[in-house]
Image (cartoon, rainbow, N blue to C red):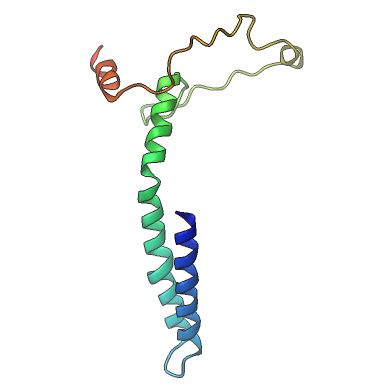
Length: 116
């Protein structure tokens, strides 16, 4: 995805340079060409292409129970630790790898939200 974006910006940059050095062109025209043929369309496409990744990250955060800002209030503050606590192990329980899966199906999320 990034390779196509870089290639497109190269093409648009070349178009803007030709516009700036053309006998009938201007630097303002080159700037407008670069912004309206390159920056604006590419930013929209990159935003749309990143939507599935942002959605998956949000679902992973909801499934793991991490606090997140959903627009209904402040995010819970992170607990602070003293230097003495930093030396202690994070958990005294053995890791038996029986954790719940990180991602749930869409139906599980719908059922969770409908319950009071």
